[in-house]
Amino acid sequence: MVQYIQTRFDASFAALSDATRRGVLEQLGRADASITDLAGKFRMTLTGMKKHVGVLEQAGLVTTEKVGRVRTCKLGPRRLTEEAAWIERYRQLWDARFDELDKVVEELKRKERVDGRRKRE
Amino acid sequence: MVQYIQTRFDASFAALSDATRRGVLEQLGRADASITDLAGKFRMTLTGMKKHVGVLEQAGLVTTEKVGRVRTCKLGPRRLTEEAAWIERYRQLWDARFDELDKVVEELKRKERVDGRRKRE
DNA sequence: GATATATTGAACCATATGGTTCAGTATTTA
DNA sequence: TAAATACTGAACCATATGGTTCAATATATC
Image 1 (cartoon, chains in turn red, cyan, brown, purple):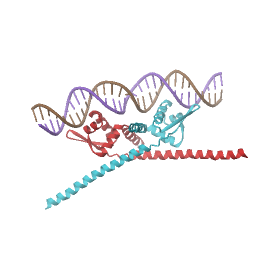
Image 2 (cartoon, helix red, strand yellow; image 1 turned 180 degrees about the horizontal axis):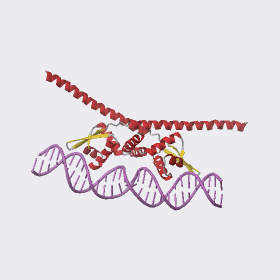
Image 3 (cartoon, protein in one colour; image 1 turned 90 degrees about the horizontal axis):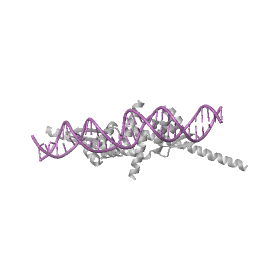
Image 4 (cartoon, helix red, strand yellow; image 1 turned 180 degrees about the vertical axis):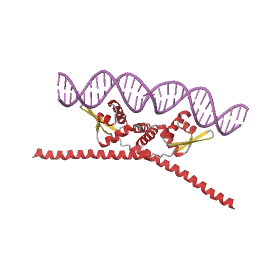
């Protein structure tokens, strides 16, 4: 279970780690497109684009269907819900962690004040 | 500018695409840790863990400081704000795209009703 | 039927990734 | 000062990635 989720995360974050693939997702958000369309838009060979689409498809972010000789790509079933949730959770962790640091700093300041007073005594 | 952002995205999403590194981030969200701590926790050589930490550091997600012989790792300055925003924007695109599809389906249904009526006429 | 179009697969290339081992160096600690 | 600890760097390995070219296949179009 955890393993499944982890490898799914691996796949989706890896898919998002390439500018071309992020661009393809944005493009498909506007309109479906063929491999030729995408290859043209991103100045790449058909074969190269096909690979990117394959990666996105593996990650569930894109689905494709071939009708006649043209393969049409569209956004896939995955909406990055879990990924968004992971990042949100991380951000909360981060906040909590730095709040702790703030407390430490506050504590230090308090002690300084106390020390100051002691020295003056 | 765009390039900078894109390569930053490349780096952070790539950093997140590995289960060990996501684990390290979660761990550091709980407490700072040395390379030895992390290597132990994730059953890996020091050298291996050092590399993962290096990737996270490159991405700005972790900072490290060496005091004496031990290097302490903590969460870095980046909170994944832009990454969260990118994903949110994508999710909206996705929703809009599928709303469009819904409209098409609605339209088809409407036509069917009309056709049905026509046939019955 | 001939030609053009759209994709596909295999093979190749350079570089990156995720890991290891092994031999250092620097710092504590006994 | 000797031994233990913590890290570091170089070198290596297998596999993945991001791209290409070239040849083949399937489908449309003239």
